[in-house]
Every structure is written in C-alpha cells, then in structure tokens.
Length: 244
Image (tube, rainbow, N blue to C red; front, side, top):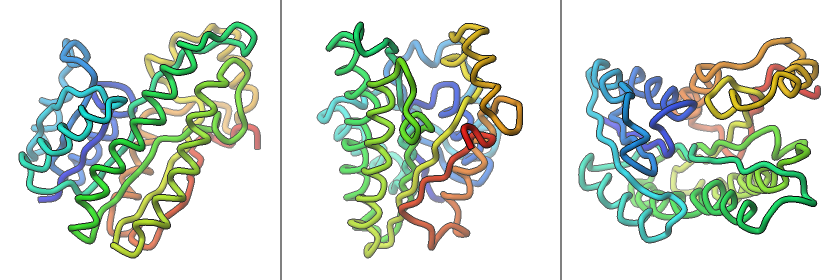
C-alpha cells in the first residue's frame, strides 16, 4: 500500500488532506511540531477507521537535521513515501514598517525552508523509486501579495518557484510536483481575523463564500492520484474566484 506524508497535519487543512488521502487508500504519516498539537484531537482515530495504517512523527520541519531524521523514520516504518504534501505553515503578520526581523525569519524558516528540507529528502527516495507526487501548499497571497503579510507572501511566492523547479528536476524520474494556492479557507488560523477583515475579503470572492478545508483536500487528492500522472509544475488556485 502506498504512503502519504503530510507536514503540519494535526489539524486544519493538513488534517483534512490526511483524512482524504486515507479515504483514497494511502497509509498516512502525520506530522506536527509537538505532541501538544495532537491533544484533544481524533485525527489518528478517524484515519485508522478508514482501514489504513497511520503514525505520527513529531518534527520541526524548519530543521534540516530533524527533517532528514524524520524522513528516514517514515521510510523505515512504511517502506516507501509515495506522496509528500508540504502543508506546514505559520503566520506572523505585520505591516512592513513594524515587522521585526524575528517575525520575518520565523515565517521563512517554517513555510519556505521546510519545503526545501522535505522535498530534498523525500525527493531522493522518490527518484530511487522512479515515482512520486510532491504537492506544495502555496497561497493566493503568493500570487497577488497581501498587505501586512510580506513574510508570508514572500514564502508562498517562493514555493511557487520551488514547485516549478522541482517539477523540472525530477520529472524525468517519474516524480510530479504541483502546488495548490488556497484563498480564504475557514481554519483556526483564519478565525483569528476580525469581522472587518473577513467582510473585506468576502467582497473580493466571486462565489461569495469562504472555502472549506475539504475544498483543498479534494484537489490534493486529484494531484496525488493516477489521473494526475501527466500534470506537473502547475499551480491550482482554490479561491472561489478571489480578485478575479
């Protein structure tokens, strides 16, 4: 049975993707930065109820050494890594004039460097397998920019460039690499926004509703499937037509 590894998957979009891929028949390697992220959380039980194997791996994905160690552990546990979803991400918002170096560096480390770390180590496994799917979580902020999110927007724009580069480098070995760019998706992260911010965003969405985590999981499911075998280097916007 094939295995999918999803970073930042204790909750939110990552958990929804993990559950959807479990429904598709993948064994699941979950990941988050601490055990605490899995407390009061039944994602593992939901995944195992789908009749697949599931294990969690605690790892700071911004750490090169931790990432290498974790990928080795997943390979030893499951025998292969067939799908990598680089989902882990954080925000530390602030206007440029007030953003600290720490805010910038932290977001770059988690959102962007983690994609390098995991793509490198998992990509090496996939090249030897001569098959694999890498799916990166970008954002519409990386396409259009977003005031107050220079750090976040920079990382998501970088992920788009990284996606296309990996697609070119690994394509001849049977490995595809694509990205999805969510718009405003209802998650604990977006729940922190004010009503004014939410209403402003809603006015820019053609479908006049916010997205759900399952909207993202469905597209990732397609990209991980055999049906997407000739799709690579693409960025699929999942935004309800935001800023169209």
